[in-house]
Length: 208
Image (tube, rainbow, N blue to C red):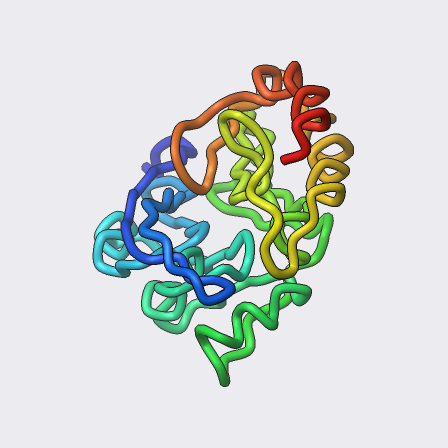
């Protein structure tokens, strides 16, 4: 028996570095799968707890929601030869951390199959040019990376980010999903599409 499809969570801690600044952060690492196989999303900071959560399961690959170092720095160690996937528009961020390794290119509309379920790639630029979210219709869950959080959009204002772009991504790609969709974020607490949608106009007004 392979058990039911599920999403497991591992929290790791480390340093996010960008534009010459360092920030201590806790990251949510997500594992989509069953008892037999798994897809890891955002292998952050320490590989050991993620590898422990994978256990004896077959690792289909590591998907990076974007190229910031705190979401990719353990990717190669966790993958251990399995493919690592990243949208090509974030390659300049990837190359700072893992020069010499070419990840497999993610594309909008691409799908993965894990434990018999479809995982859909949604290109959602704004936090970074190549940011993506992963939608799992069978579970009504969205893995939002740093595009959408409990309380609003991911941070913009640093290199390669754009507030108008992230607003457009959220409005057109994410708020179009069912309101009951649970949003599993890259940092912090989970939320839902419905809970965030009601505040969209307030985000526009506040400008961040």
